[in-house]
Image (tube, rainbow, N blue to C red):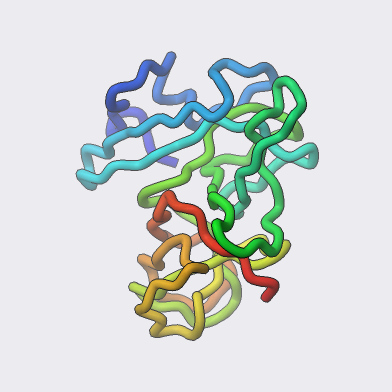
Length: 179
């Protein structure tokens, strides 16, 4: 989690930068609100979207997808990824855990931490999520330096264990393959 002394909100009103990391039981912002922040330490921009979490809650750093519901107060919700061809799904990664059906911001673009699968991954590998996936996976095999329609991010850390690692989220929709 980033600290408030290094993040600056760009062009948006936000009660507090800490709101980006504090899910609440009652909506405090309009669902779907996108906030852009600049990290003064890394000189990078990040984007967050305001959503309602799954009825089971969300695990910090686990990738999810964003979809749109028809229930009042749940028009922009997170879901477990499912197989979907083009145009694909918007991938998000909560940087904190969410209690069931809470509202809060999930990261949709920029440097963040995300759970990786137990496989070899290298700096610069393109990443994807899969049907019912709970982690980021190399889009192909390690050394995967070609972006595909499945790619939703890029790996910034080398490793081979199933832990949260530094990645960069593209902030675009990605096709979700079955495996």
